[in-house]
Each structure stands twice: as structure tokens, then as C-alpha cells.
Length: 50
Image (cartoon, rainbow, N blue to C red; front, side, top):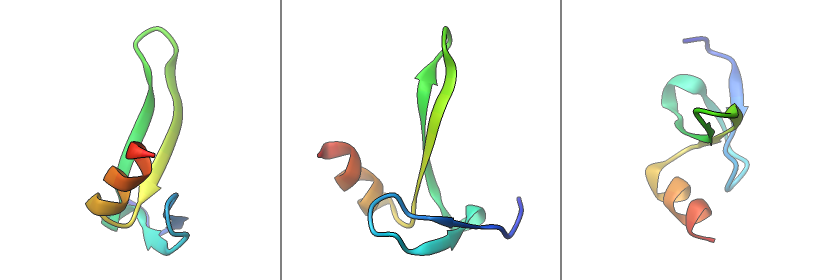
């Protein structure tokens, strides 16, 4: 894992990929279409519940 900074899709906080909670959109037919990263499991749940 790199130490490249990524941004939480919910709050905009900068985090490293090591500290993130990723969510992968896509399926076996289309492959990965988008990856959202979150700074916490709570932010991931809240964002996906909107």
C-alpha cells in the first residue's frame, strides 16, 4: 500500500489508503466501475445509506 493521500467521499478528510474503508462499485460483468474511500466505517455506512 502506498502512502498516497486520498479523500474521504463523505467528509473530504485526507487519509492514506492504508487507513481507509473502501467501497467498490461494479459487478462481474462490468468490472470495477468506481471506488469510494472513507475515513471511517461510520462515514461509509452513512454515505451509502443516503
